[in-house]
Length: 198
Length: 179
Image 1 (cartoon, rainbow over the protein chains, first blue to last red):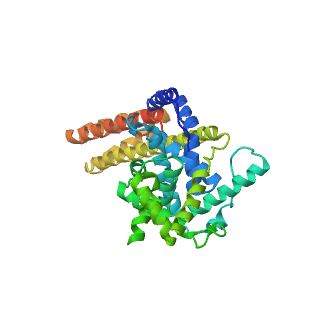
Image 2: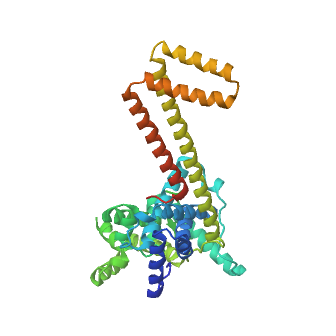
Image 3: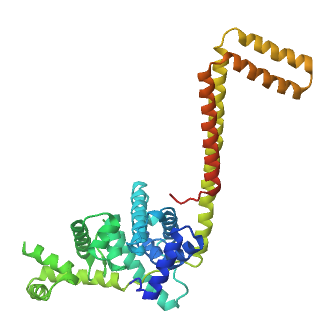
């Protein structure tokens, strides 16, 4: 879902990633421009709030900047940076749970950061985003990351395992458990979930 | 047991072979429980698949540049503090070593102090006193301190200088990136 790249784009990206690794700040700015969309989307899907998602996405790029030398160019850069983002969001969600603050009290229920769609479109989008958020809120942090990587980034089980430092059977088991839990909680009559969140 | 087997197929539909798909379809016709679960999962999966990617807000990259600059400044401030602390600690160590050497050198320390005060009263000029004190200090040290202490003190001063120069160099050229 997060867009396929042309070969030329990929080549250009590889070039500025290499320049950024050699300390070229302007090239890193290009990296931020190129990957801000996928990184922000992942953080938004994980955290459910645009302000917190932006903060997490910025932290992700900062971590990437600090550790750029440890990036292995044989690996896909998207996978590397999304792995940083998903682990950062998992940590944030764990801390949030530790703080024992209700999401409803703490976060505005829905704010779509997409730029200026029409009013009808906005309503449909809002409903859809609300549904998505409700679905994801029901999952634990790692299961949520696995679902997001699977459905928005079309990651294979192997890629999810690599991103989340899990084994492939563990990813399959987590995805199965998450899907089953979501399906069982879905009420077909009212098109809403029937039980409390996981 | 039978449900479990089909549940696995139901939730991993994209990876099924043609034979598995046919088996699942046949089971869904005869099993109401699995059919319901299938419909419910199809609804949830439909929502997940239809949700578009959310774009980054306007000005994201510019705000990142500001954040990066602040992170750099924080890092440099930390390095500066570290340099200052290292210098102070180093000076204290050297001063303690020299002080201990002077004190432990016996009664001559008193004559050394007396000479310093005498010089202060007789000469009157602060600069001269300072220069004389320094000369006196060095002369006394040469007489009183064993060669080993001199070598140790020189090594400590050299090490401290080297640390200080290295830290200042890193402070000037090192970024927030990890090596």
